[in-house]
Length: 57
Image (tube, rainbow, N blue to C red; front, side, top):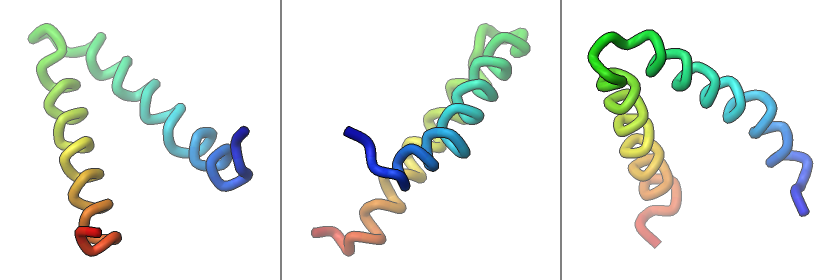
């Protein structure tokens, strides 16, 4: 189902990132706006990175 690189990615990057975002949203006194902004920035950066790496194909 999952390959070794994808398992490593989940364990090292994705799980701590999700934990950090949940913590950030809980600590934010403005109803999670900072967490949503960070999440939005990361989604946009990820899309741009994939587009650049695949050269738009």
